Structure formats: C-alpha cells, structure tokens
Length: 277
DNA sequence: ACCGGAGCCTGTTAGC
DNA sequence: TGCTAACAGGCTCCGG
Image (tube, rainbow, N blue to C red; front, side, top):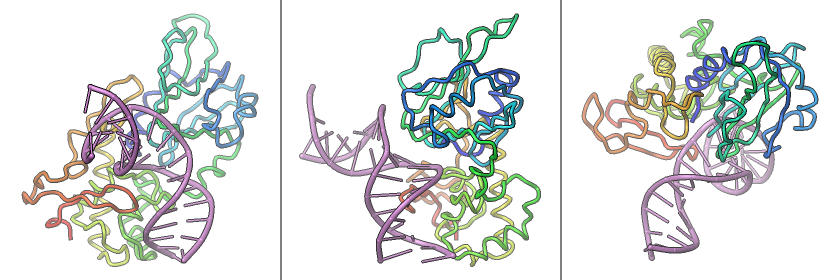
C-alpha cells in the first residue's frame, strides 16, 4: 500500500516523462476517481495545460500546471501510475487515462499517463488552491522543521493510542500501516501506548525511527508487499527489509520472541511484545 | 477529543 | 473440486 516512500518513488519516476508535457485528452471508465471537480469539469479544465513540476505532500502526488492549477492524485490502496506508449494494451484495471500531446522530434509521440487502480479507492483533484485538499495535513516527517521537542509536544497534546496517531494524516503526513509498525519497533515503543505517556527520549527515538524507516523505504524504492510496484512495473526492495510488518509468528530479530499481530483500528498491527514496551 | 464501526472496492484465501 | 464468506486496508463519515 503506497505510503510516503512509495509515493516519493512514483514522483521521482514520473518527473522525466511528464515535466514539459501537455495534456491532450482525459478519459475514464470510473468517474468516481474524480473527487473534485467532476470528471467532465476536470477534463475541460485540464486540456491544454502543461506540467512544469512534480511534487509530493504526505501521500499525495502533486502536478503543478501551467495555469497555476495543481493536479493532485492519491493512490490510496492500489493506485499505480505509469507513462506508456498509447499502443500499449490497456490493463484490466487501467481506469483513467491522461493522453499527452505529441512533441516534435524524438520518440515522445503518442504517450499517455495511465492510472491503474484495482480497488478503485484512488482519488484525483484538480484545484487552483492545493490547500483545499492538503490544508488539514500534519507536518512532513522528513522536514527538519519538525524538531524532537515539537514532536514531543504534539504527542503530549493528544491522549491517543500512539499508533493511531501516527496513522492520522492530520497529525503527521505520509506514514501508513507498514512504516508505523516498523518505526514503533525500532523505537522500542508498544503500539498501544498512549501518546501522552511517552518520555522525551522516547518521543525523540520515535521521530528518529520514523525518519530512518522512511529514508530506508525511499532508498529501497518502496515496499512491494501488496499491489505496489514502481511505475515501470518492477518491485521495490523494502519488503526485504521489514522487521515486524507481516512477520507474525516469526522470531524478533533482536530477542527471538515471536512477533505478535493484533487488530487496531481494523488494521493489522505487528510488534515484538518483549522489545516494545 | 477520541473511539469504534460502516462503507467504499476487488482479488485472494480460508473454510465447507 | 467448486462454491461462498471472510479478509485486507487508506480514508471519510457517522454515532456514541
């Protein structure tokens, strides 16, 4: 499931094939991909606009357009983006297709950006003010502006189960189920702890661990655990470096105790009952 | 403020 | 073997 490192990997991969390109058409067989505005409005508004930059905020992919609009895509559970030649056979779950204008010269004729989405949870926004979509997001975990002191304060301002907080995008943007479990493991913190009970050193350790696992995820180009693959179709490598996620019953690498799995917020939560207190 | 549950989806897997 | 039911999970909305 795409989280910050997976989304970052996608953004980096799409930069080269998309920047400088202009949208020539937009088609969909799943109009509900379009959260804001409707598909019809988005199509009219998008045609002719060029991409001049790509970015990421939390798990959202941002495409900065020539008119000042921003095309925003959220992959949710199963979204996949790739730029391919128009002749490439459509995949069963390619639901929304952005045709790119042909460019003079080179082999950049007849390409399109395809949004594949098996579970149809993905969402597309086309807005002038990105804050309408991104305004409620918490800070970027890799932003140096988020200091250990500030993070500790934020944790103590709430009295929630710490893992639930990490998954709350209004608290911190970009962490999902896999990286939350991994970070709590490396910080030695039980996922059920209340956020306001963490000591200063535990908060600092948690922030450090979050940054380390996200950085590792980016370096390894994402975790191909469920449906995620890179835009070119190849797998990431982070699934080979997880310590607890999906390792239910297998020994903890530190102490040998079997990793436990519990359900929290209807989501699998993996942890070492000995190392994480 | 916080929590739990339903709903959105479909492919996979467990169970009979 | 062939069927159905349960399950997974990011996010939003609703009720308590």
